[in-house]
Amino acid sequence: MSSDAASELIRHARSARVVVVGGGVAGLVAALECAKVGMQVTLLERSDRLGGLVASAELDGRMVDVAADGWRVAPGDFEDLIDELGLRERVVGARAGDTWVAGSFGTALLPEASILGIPASPFDARVARIIGWSGVWRAYLDRLRPPLTIGAERNLGALTSGRMGRRVLERMVAPLTWGIHSVPPERVDVDRAARGLNAALTRTGSLSGAVAQQLPDDRSAPPARATLEGGMSELIDAVSGRLADLEVEVRTGVDVTAIDRRVAGFAVEATGLDPDAGGEPVEADAVIVATPEPAARRLLAPLLADAGGPRLSPADLDVVTLVLDAPALDARPRGHAVYAVPDTAAATAVIHATATWPHTAGDPHVVRVTTPARGGSDAEVIAASTDAATELLGGDIGRVTAVHRATWTPALPSSALSPERDELRVALRRDPRIGVTGAWIDGTGITRVAADAKTEAERVRSALLWGGSAGDSASA
Ligand SMILES: Cc1cc2nc3c(=O)[nH]c(=O)nc-3n(C[C@H](O)[C@H](O)[C@H](O)COP(=O)(O)OP(=O)(O)OC[C@H]3O[C@@H](n4cnc5c(N)ncnc54)[C@H](O)[C@@H]3O)c2cc1C
Image 1 (cartoon, protein in one colour):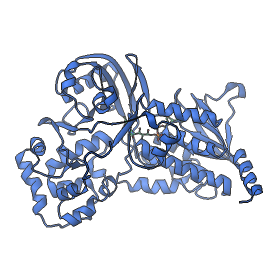
Image 2 (cartoon, helix red, strand yellow; image 1 turned 45 degrees about the vertical axis):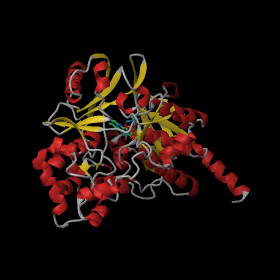
Image 3 (spheres, protein in one colour; image 1 turned 180 degrees about the vertical axis):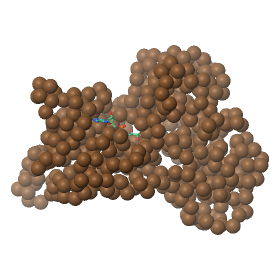
Image 4 (cartoon, helix red, strand yellow; image 1 turned 90 degrees about the vertical axis):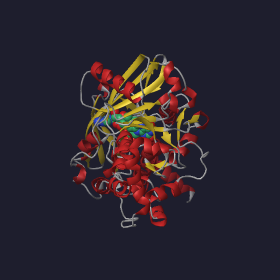
C-alpha cells in the first residue's frame, strides 16, 4: 500500500463512528477491536458498571466473583487478549478438579476418566456408587451392542441413553448439562460438545471406549480452567484501562431504547444520556449490539426482518454467593462443584470457589449456589440457597458471614442443538454495518464470547474501512 493510500485509510478510520451497546465481555472486546484502528467508539452500558456477567462484589472485605469466575483455557483470541492486556502474570490455574454429583444416592465423585459425565469404564467404583450395579451392567451393554447408529447420533441424550442406559444419562450426564449450561442433554450436540467423540465411537465400537480413547494421555496436562489472582474484575479493569487509552467514550447508566436507521448511518436513542446535551441520540456510522437476548431482539427488530421470534436463552438463574466461616469444610472440599440430578435438590449446582482456586483455598470458604429464578424476596432465596448448600456440600457449612444475591440471564452453549439459533446468527449478520454479538447468539463462555466479538467487530470494521453501506441487505 502506498503511503498516500495508508494515510487515506487512517483518515477514513478516524472519521468512522461506532456505537457499541452493552458493556459485557462481548461489548468491551468489540469496542477495543474498533478503537485499535483509530475509530471513534462510544460504548453505552445500561448498568452503573462494566462487565455484565463478569461481576464481583465486596464481601467481608474481599472482592468475590458473583457470576463467571474463570475461563476455559485454550489457545486463541482470549489467551491473546490476556497477553495483550499484560495480565499473564496474574493468571492462576484451577486445581485439578474433582466434579461431584448429588441425588438419591447421596453426594458422589464423578469418575476422573469421563467426558461430559460419560464414564470411560462402567466398572469404575465411582460409577457403581452413582448408578448401582444394575445401572453398571446396563452401561456395560454398550461394549457388547452392535454399532447400529455409530458415529451418526448428534443428540447427547439419545446417544448416552441408547448406548449406556438411562441411569448414566440421568445421574451422570444430565446434572452437568443442567448445572453448567441450563439445558437438558437432549439439547446438546455431541459433535460440538466433545469434538472427535463420535469418530472415536466409530473406531472403538463403544461409547465408553470412545471416551477412554479421547481422554488426554498426560493427566499432568495444564489446568483446563484459569482465573486472575484478584478475580475476574481484573480483566474488566484492564480492558477499561485500554479503552480509556484509546479514547473510547464509555458511558454507564445509559439504557439504549432504540436504534433508528438514518440516511447515512444510525441514531442511537437511550435514557440516561447527558441531559446537558439535551439527551440527544448518539449518531453512528455503524452499531454493534452486544446485549443479552431480550434487549438485542427489541433493538434489532426494527432494523432486521429476522430479529423477532421466541426466546432462545434458558430461563433466568438466581445465584447466591455465600462466604462461610466453616473450618469443617476444609476436610470436605467439593472440587470445582456439585451438580444435582434434576429435580432431586433445591439447587442445580453449588460451586465451591475456594476449593477450585488454589490461591483462595481454606477458611473462609466461598460457595455459589445456582437455582432457577422463581422470584421471591432476597431473604427467601438466600435461606433456600443456604439449605441447598448444606445438602449438596454434605452437612455442616458453619456460619454465613456475608451473602450476595443476583439474578442473571444465561445463554445457550455453543454446543447447543439449536437450528433456530444457527439460522438467526446468519440472518442477523447480513448488514455490514450492524454487528450482533454476545453469548446469546454465538454461545456462552468468556473465551467463546471474546472470540466472537472480535470476529464480529472485524466484519463491521472492514465494512467501514473498505465499503458496504448500511442497509445493503437484510433490512426490514
Ligand atoms: C451464573 C453464570 C456463571 C458463569 N460462569 C462462567 C465462567 O465461570 N466461565 C465462563 O467462561 N463463562 C461463564 N458464564 C458465561 C459467561 O459469563 C457469559 O457467556 C459472558 O460473560 C457473556 O458476555 P456478554 O457480553 O455476551 O453478555 P453480558 O455479560 O450479559 O453483558 C451484556 C451487557 O449488556 C448490558 N445491556 C443490556 N441491555 C442494555 C441496553 N438496553 N442498553 C445498554 N446496555 C445494555 C447489560 O447490562 C450487560 O452489561 C457464566 C454465566 C452465568 C449466567
